[in-house]
Image (cartoon, rainbow, N blue to C red; front, side, top):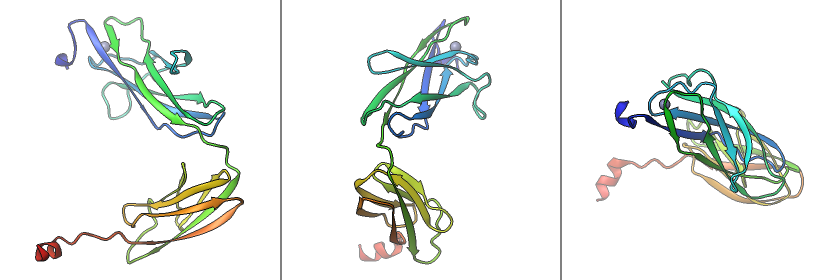
Length: 208
Ligand SMILES: [Zn+2]
C-alpha cells in the first residue's frame, strides 16, 4: 500500500452508489463509501453533501467498521431531500476528516439524481414469456423512468403519473420489448415476449 501514498499525505477516495430517482420533494437514501489509500481507520469521520453551488446540505458520520469483505472501505447511508421540481441535480460528497495523525488529500465523490413526477395511476404489467425454459427471473419493466421487476407470476405493478411513456420489458433471456403507452387511469397491459436469439457459432461458420 505504500506506493499508493505520499510520505505523509494519504489520498482519500469517495464512492457513491444506490442512487435512486426520487419523486419530487421526497426523501431518499444513498450509499457512500470512503477509503484511504494508506488504509487508515476512517470510522466515525464526517462527510458532507454539497449542491452544485457548494452549499452544504447535510452531514453524516462513517460507520465504525469497514464494509464486510473490504479492508478499509468505510460506509454510511445518507438520507437526502429531493427538491420540489423536476430536473437532474448534481451533488458532491466531501470527506471532512479531522483528528487523524496523517494529512489526507480527499477527492470529492459526485453523483446526480433525476426527480420524478408524483405517480397518479397504477399500471399492472403482465409479462407472457414464450419459449422453452424461459423463467420470469430478473425481468425488468420500465415505464419511462419508473421501474419494477416482475414477480413469480410475471406481474409488475408500477405507479406512474399521467402521460405518454415508453414501456420496456428487459432481461438477459428475452428479446427486449418496447411499446408506447398513454397513461390516463389505472390499467393493465399484457406484453408478449420471446426468447433471445442465441448466436449459433457453428451455423455462422458454415456460412462464412
Ligand atoms: Zn490515511
